[in-house]
Image 1: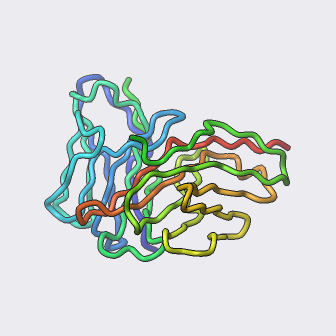
Image 2: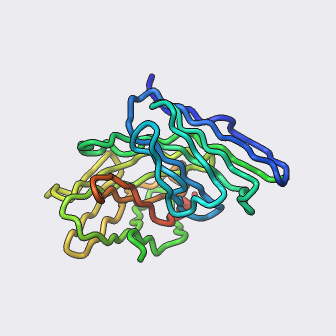
Length: 116
Length: 116
């Protein structure tokens, strides 16, 4: 079955460390996205990529970095510059060209990051 | 400016009753899509229902229906015959095209609690 896999499900980071969250999809979707969700709040876009080797900043990109070397993979690195990284991170993918009907997002199951 | 507005941070409904979750949106595009997602406590995002801007009929999916009022720019979700398992966070989202790029914008969500 096609889908998106995020790993790990839970991640603990010490202050000052960089950590990388994995997101892999086998849906042949062109676009991939990273969102951050804080308790009781909505989704805020961190980065997105419409095509391999290209990505754009979202609304809250500071302290994060991404790469898109393969269509299937869009890892997110939370750097030490991100001062408040404790949150729930969701990865999503979608068709880019001419999405039909409810060809919206397919979401991963999320990674919960905690700074210890 | 907020493009998707969900004014109800939290809602309660009695089991077996119907409930309406509000969503208003703002766009100058003629072609756009509106989505509702459910997020249980486990964190995954579950697609519920979709409404295209050109669809003349309100979308329905089982117990979910979307009350689409284009002139008012509202896309309220109606859940009929509420069940305890409906307790979750609900997000309204809009897909719009900007400069050849499809972007998905989410509201801040409504937390629904179904009472036995």
